[in-house]
Amino acid sequence: MKHAIIFAGLALLAAGPAPAYAQAQQVRDEVVSVQLTLQDAVQRAVEHNPELAIVRLDTEVEAARVGEGRSAYTPELLTTVGRSNVGVPPANLFGGDTGTLTRDLFSSAGVRQRIPWGNGTWSLSWDAARTTSTSPLNSFEPAVASGLGIAFSQPLLRDRKIDAAQQQLIIAKRNQQSSDLQFRESVIQTVAAVKQAYWTLKALRANVTVQQRSLSLAEQLAKENGVRVQVGQAPPLDLVQVQAEVADRRGTLIRAEAAAADAEDVLRRLIMDPSDATFWNVHLETIEAPGPRAPLPDVEAIVARAMNERYDVSRAINDVSNAADNVTFLSNQKLPDVRLETSYRGSGLGGSQLLRAGAFPGTIVGRTGSGFGDVLGQVLTNDYPTWSVGVTVSYPLGRSYEEASAVRASVERQQAAQRVASLKLDVARSIRQAARQVQSTAEREEAARAGAALAEQRLNSEERRYQAGLSTSFLVTQAQRDLLQAQVNLLQATLDYQSALVGFEALQLAPAVTPGERVALRGYDVVALPAATPRGLFRTASDASIQ
Image 1 (cartoon, rainbow, N blue to C red):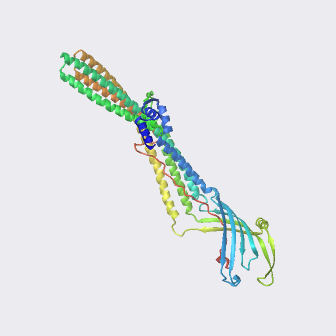
Image 2 (tube, rainbow, N blue to C red):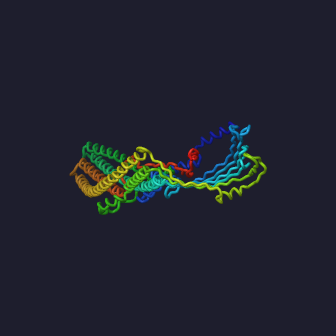
Image 3 (cartoon, one colour):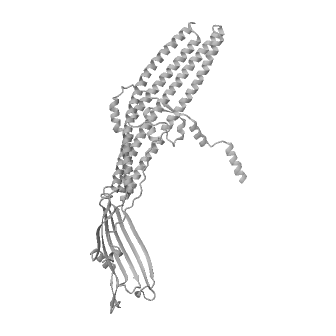
């Protein structure tokens, strides 16, 4: 049986791939043509470009950081449930011969929260306990106790205007805005890259056509020279010369086709969906032609508008605002830490109360009981109130860390402001330079178009003279070369004009990106800052002993 399975598997392998696999392989090998307008290419890039998707995810990261900053103001629930057993040896007169044993069953629950207005902190707590003890001094056995407390702490100087949690939230929100600006900037840069790749592919495909025509002209001339050599009207050297020219132009055509294929891959990489591996087999047809040339707009007005509307300038201004907030925060931290502390607590006690008679500590003569409801009544009716109101003050002696940090933050704010000023100068220079580039390439295109027309006329004239026996194959070949060079120059000038126009449009909203450069928002880590629990002000045991 085992051998039969093996032979069956070998037979399947020998039979070749399964029909479904073969069909899928055939689909992958087929080349599908897609007619692509410039707008289609841009739309595909915005939807599928992986680099743009990375920047889009950065905006979600910054939004999550804003949520992290807001979490500092989220109410926090605290709860405790436990039991304890405390045995005390007979260290005094009232400890008996065996000491005392105290058992507690206790629980507590509370809520605390930092307030975003004024940066104070409040807390509300509830606790309950049941205690049993062998101590002869207890009045309740067992004892049930409960308490309800509320406390509030308000900074009066330091942290009142801005504290660490508020600073983090402000900067996180502004960084989220900068991340959105970074995404828009990346969209502009991606669109510019797609347009550049689109026109480059179109120009290189046109160059292939020019090279094919040039090769056809050389082959036609070689054919005519071959006839003339056979009939003795031309020396064999003329045929060899033309055949060498044919071979050279065929090599140039091969290089042009390779360059066009590389340009197609560049465009494909920018607009393809990474999950669609078959897109590498798609043939992109750039069907859109350059539009009519429009007059150059007012460059100075564009520069003035870009000073305020360019995304990198807006992000740099946000950096200045962040630096200013850091100065405000650290300057506030130099102030004394003065806080108003208030608290109130209502307490209740009940259980099985021991009734005593006689001299201290007395003899237990009976019991009277009170339930947990009585304890709650004591808590809520203010039978045993405990409250406190006070002010705490702390201030470092000597130069503090906050003072040194405030000096550093002030310098960083000045640096950020200077960066904005320097960036605006770069914006003005780059846009003015791009405008001159558009103008000069437009003039070069007109000159190249005139040169190509003249080269075409010269070739036609030289071919007629050659047919009439008044010229040589060398002069015809030279005229063909001149026409080829003039047409290539025209293609290059046209591409340079379109590239300059794309760059000029993009620079009005975003900076240019050099190859290999990656512009990313500097990350900001949000540190968890839980609110402290205010407890009010009470004298310690040593303070209470002073009369």
